[in-house]
Length: 76
Image (cartoon, rainbow, N blue to C red; front, top):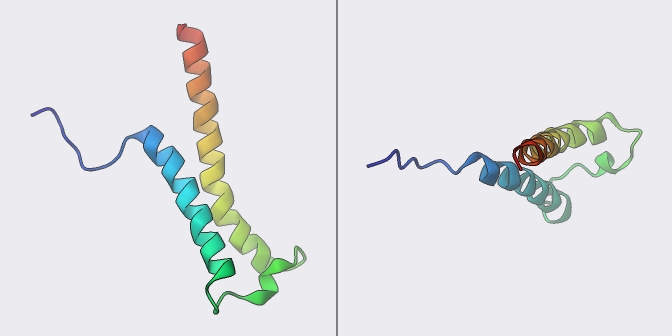
C-alpha cells in the first residue's frame, strides 16, 4: 500500500481553500443575519478585519500558481 493519505494534494488545497473562504464570506454577508452591517464601509476597521482572512489564502494561491508556472517553464 503506497501512502494512501486522507488529505488532498497541495494543488487541490490551493484551489479549495480560497474558494471555500470566499464562499464563507459571501454566505456570511448575504444570508447570515448576525453579520455586522457596519463592515461594508472601507473607512471601518471591521472591513479590513474581514478583508485580511480572504487576502491571505488568495495570496498563497497566486504565489504557488506563479511558482508552479516557473517550474513548468524551466523544465519544458
